Image 1 (cartoon, rainbow, N blue to C red):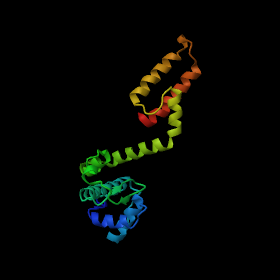
Image 2: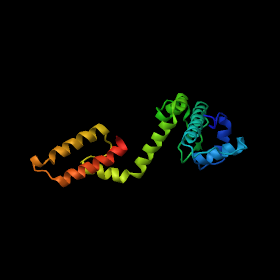
Image 3: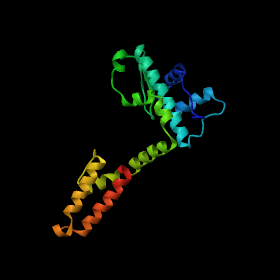
Length: 193
């Protein structure tokens, strides 16, 4: 974690965020934090592990800041990579901290930062891009098998086997249909398998 930012000055973060009432992106916020704190500028965000570490440390600090704002009834933070925004208090206080938030739990547990390897980051990114780039191809493949989202990989495999069984030549099935099912499972295996 040599190049990772250690964003612990939540008052500095809040000051930057409040200067942007319509919100700002994660990248914009990181850039502003680095402009104030580092003569070197942003580290190499093309390195996937460094990118993950920067992201994690920033979001860890944002969730800490949001908890403090809620506790002191000073507003809340919207936390998203595309929009980080402070909103004034409107009766949030302790009740907001009671709302379950799995992302909050993830980012507040620093073991997640330390335990995540470069290979795991690469796998997360690969999965993300697979979902982003192949969503229409994935939807079409699911439709070929008579399925729709949400669906699990075991359910997909089970349905695939059923479809192959139904199109078996002994049951009056077609070779062309079996080819379509095989193409569909190949697409889905890239995204689920």
